[in-house]
Length: 283
Image (tube, rainbow, N blue to C red; front, side, top):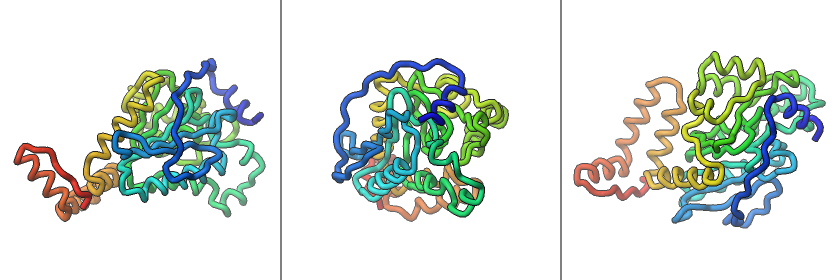
């Protein structure tokens, strides 16, 4: 689409050819999606995997894609076998941004009265940990979507940017706030005010990314991390996630105390003392 091409052309840097990914298996629920592919992965199917699949538009985040993403997230959230979720895109783009064509004619009144982009917030409300596996472009809304996740793994050629300033607007899905918390005020301000991109290496150095992986192994490494998380007590993992994401130590203390009301906390400490592996029951 023309608007999206304008956005990409404004963000400096050359385009690179994609690297092929292995085939994906269908979603366990049998859901038919147009813009995403979803399945369960891991040795024991404990990981929910969601791939954004709108390659001709570089995974531009249209309303239909976000609706399908929310549906898949809800399914995995309600699946007791799933302990963590991986969100990825294609090799060329994780997501190149929001769908500019959908928003170009909106007025202030339209945005305000409809709570525009409110449905994007569902990702931040998922209790299970979500890992973003980012290859290629994570620009604008794509960068914001990655930052809504709990952990970001990046392929060696991944690039991050908030280029909204170049089309006369600002980040509108939490970008100014989450980017500032992740990389600090100075770098966040520079990225938001110039629209410049940063590399995966710069993103890791700044604290936006926790691990850089080869392009071809990125998703599998993210799945391995998700499997490790899923092997822990799901109720305590949810508490830990809420505590890390919360502001203030009072809630952290309350949630820490709350773990002592769980059987899994007692089992975990007992297993440690007895020098054996814990057998968590998610209770």
